[in-house]
Length: 444
Image 1: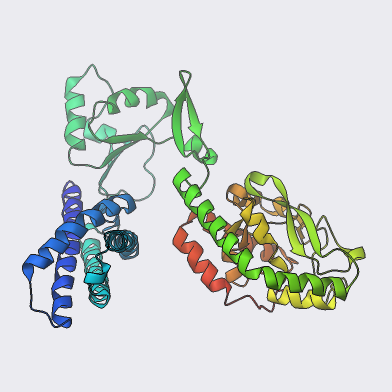
Image 2: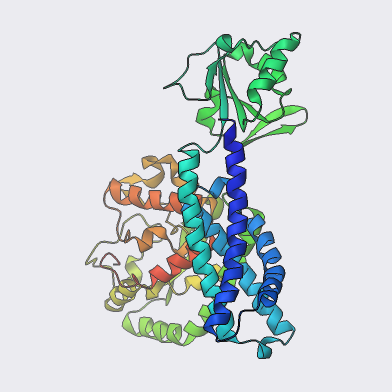
């Protein structure tokens, strides 16, 4: 197991070298494709200018992190983001320095495409090799069991303290030396011990030079994210929101920019819809309803009115059904095409909603006569991110009334999956897929 760390470092070096070779070969092949003679000096200059930028971007995305070497999807995705950032910086530099007119855009495009193909192929091959080298467990963990039963099958890094001659006693230097020898070359030491021995093991583990942990099964139900020290006491971090500050900033800027552009483009259409709603049935053009938003705080969502004014349901106690008598003729068309949701661009613009996120529900929403949070307490977790105009559940076709528990549960699982795996790329993919399902059989 001690060779695992060395293998991972070699794989990280292989990722860097393969990216450099892909960049160099791409420039040379592009020269040939463009009909120019091979010029290693030019290729070296391009590599020297662009690769440092790519490498720094890769540090942020984890493109050369050993932990992604054995996972082809994660490796290619992290490198692809770094590649896109580098390409954007490169084109901006050409524009800012007015060198764009002296450089063939076709040749640059060819170079980028070749580099992307070669880099992707190389990373896929490295991932396949890494899986053979590292096996299913790419990290070398030394698991010490002291005064507790060993759970499951005994893995290669699992030892019993009594068999290894380990006693958590700093007054015995031979034991401290023994622990250091066993930990050498490992990625992590994990101790499973009884409550009475934890304090002694905590002192012993501070002597080793690698990450060390003590398993505390009684905290499993709390699902803490981290541990902090506050006023001399230890506190468990249970939640910090699914997005970091820079991710929230990026998502907010993206949302408001898209909402502003979309509102300007859709204003003529929204004016026509407003006029049609007014002519179709008496009552207000817009319908406002309290919904549950970010942090489980309520806000008023806006839609074009699709029901007869005397039958509007401001609490959302009654789910809309297919052929619902409350819906107007125009309202049925607006719901089928999702055009009734256009006023929510205003909610996005003022920061109450996102373009993509879990769809906001009314407080009285039910499935099988049960309130959503009575079916699954994890319902509240979906509100750790802003609600959206569209979401993962919607593009999967999970729309319409929640008549059965499974209708609600499928949407909840999709929302929780989105919250746990958010990325700007996933938002773009969901937006793209939304246009494919704007008209849906369950939209009524």
